[in-house]
Each structure stands twice: as C-alpha cells, then as structure tokens.
Amino acid sequence: MASAIIHLCVAKEVNKVLGMDEKLLFLGTIAPDLSKQIGQTKEISHFLDHSNEDNIPNIDRFLNKYKDELVKPFEMGYFIHLLTDKYWFRDYIYNYIERYAIESGRKDITESALVRLIYDDYTNINIDLIDKYGLSLELFYEEFKYPTSKIIEIPMDKLPIIVEKMGIIIEESKQEKTFIFDTYDIVKFIDETVKYIIKDIQMLGLNKVSQE
Image 1 (spheres, rainbow, N blue to C red):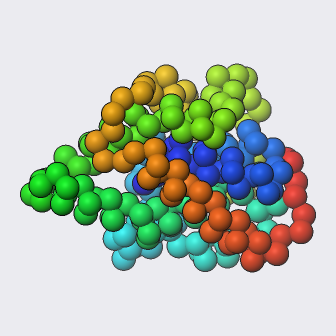
Image 2 (image 1 turned 180 degrees about the horizontal axis):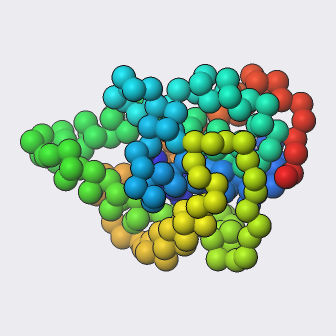
C-alpha cells in the first residue's frame, strides 16, 4: 500500500478543493490502516473482495454504505485513502517493482525482501514529502477530540493507536538515498492521483460539507 505520508499528501492536496477540517480529514485518511496495528487483516477495513488478489478496494461497496456520510471530513478522508490505494495498486506500484527487478538485475528477489526495500524507501522519503507538501502534523502530537462515525469496518475507540503509530513514523523518518523510488516518482504519483480523486468526488455530486 502507499505509505501513510503519501496518503496524507494526497488528502492535503484534495482538501484544497474540499475545504474540510484538515485534522479530521487526516485522521480519516490514516484510519483504514488501523487494522494492521491491532492485528487484523485489511480485507474488511479496505473493502477488499474475497477473490481480490490485487489489493484494490471495492469503491462501489464503500459508497453503497457511506456515500451520504462523505459530507463529513473523517469519512471523506477514509474514502480518499481507499481511492489512493486503488490508483497505487492499479496504476503505479507494479510498474516500479518490475523496473527495480530489471535495473537491479535482481529478477530472483523474493517478494518479502522487496517489501522490506519498499518500506525502507517510505521511511527515507517521508521528510522530503512533508517539506514539499507543507504537511501540518499537529494531530499526531497534540490533544485531539476524536469523532464518532457510522463506519463500522474499524474500531473507532482504537483510533489513538494509529495516531500514536504515525507519530513514531514521523520521528523515525530520515533523509537518505532511496533504493527504488525517488521524490520525483512519488510526487508524480501524488499529483496525478489528486486529479483523479477530485474528479471522482465531483462525480458524486456532493453539495454539502460538514466540519464535524
């Protein structure tokens, strides 16, 4: 999946059009990944079909349940996360896995080893992305009033766990040379994904925005 910082960058750029409460939107944007922190698979939280092996969320299934809730920033953030994953797995990540195998000559690299390299890259590039997109990360360090939500695919009472994890991710971020990605690659993905998501949201015809 795309890193938490990538998800936040996408959400921040989309919110330039939406104008929603940024902290609640950011919280919703990282909320689906709570499942990993509490030892659950992401099948439920990410709306994955049982037969789905490509990790692309079933967006229609999410909308059938929660479209009317998307006027709220937490729920919209959750939706933005799922859309970002959709474009990450559909259009992006496998191209870079293939490129790495070719350019490195390591066509026999195991999937688990490649996953470790990718997550190392995430850590290395986070600071560049935080600076470039001017992410305001007070949510992860300050007292915060958590929202209620009709979304049942994650345990809302455990949201502080993912917020604490994000604080750790930010603290561990460092500037080093990456293995697979570079800033240009990721920025291109973010900027293109923002355009796609804005169009997706506009097609829903939402005409009311709540800051709660």
